[in-house]
Length: 194
Length: 194
DNA sequence: GTCTATATCGAGATAGAC
DNA sequence: GTCTATCTCGATATAGAC
Image 1 (tube, rainbow over the protein chains, first blue to last red):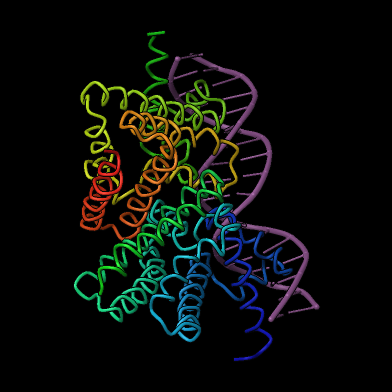
Image 2: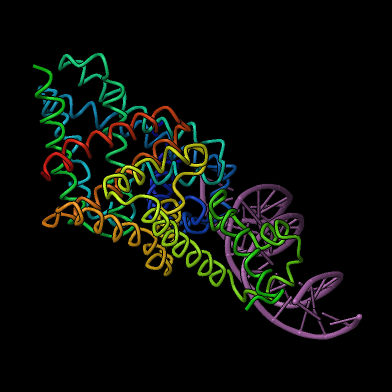
């Protein structure tokens, strides 16, 4: 509500978000987050009663952050093709972080899946927001028989690029693959739609 | 050396291998492994002095297991194309496990990368064994200018399929994507090579 | 070799002073 | 609201009996 407490809460979530991305959820302790924010562990529990609670807050922040970003893309680009190019270029714009820490969406889902964590379903919403947006762009281009399938394919291609670029810490590979994915979009999607 | 101790050691590694795949490395405790094998925690330390040591053993087992599997494929299929089809079909053959636990190669590398674990380089050898084999098959088909790049592309496609299938626990998606990847191989690689 | 303690540490979580 | 203890638990790891 604009109070000082709310702002601190946001700072905690932001710090946790960054640490979960860099170190993973389970590798990040309350001490890590508290240290990053500059508060004590005890104070931490005033704002979040459990680790699941902060994970939930981080996921919600990421989901709404993705949603906000896509809305900005919609304003920035009127042509659905440009929007899709911009999506595909995303790994390129974040190549430094991705080669170091993978995709923030996929690596969290992978971690939660391994842990059989109940919040995997919530984390999947990060994917779903992207997918919904992708489907919308594809339908604007007249692709409506298999838009969902193409959208899922684009998600998977991005995950494959991020995973391998991360494992090998290889930015050149990432760049190659983004180029190749753009060609695929040109040949298979854009050409076939008119 | 065929002693009883060696056999128990192998049983420990096999149990750890399975548990690391299902639960992840860090989520698996010595107690988990000891319970699975049916020995005490204390006995465990007679065979492996640290958790890193058992991780190392699991990675080596997986690397040599992959190597052995690929050699068997080489015997089973003489045509490099058949071999590549068989590679691409691998997620299909393991679709149950992959939708539940992801790719055993990629998910371990992702976990070790997040933890900044020094053994990530060793884990990457799992990828490299596959890649080397893929390059060999592609070169047999006369693809030698960009065989490495195509091999890396195939690795990444597999990772994308496994990651998303795992996050959504979606076998249908996995099946669709394998089909699509086969078409890509037909159109982009096989057609262009003659 | 295999076991039962046990040591040690760091994690999540709580209580209560201020 | 924020802090300093403190509790509890489970993990890695060790010691030493058998």
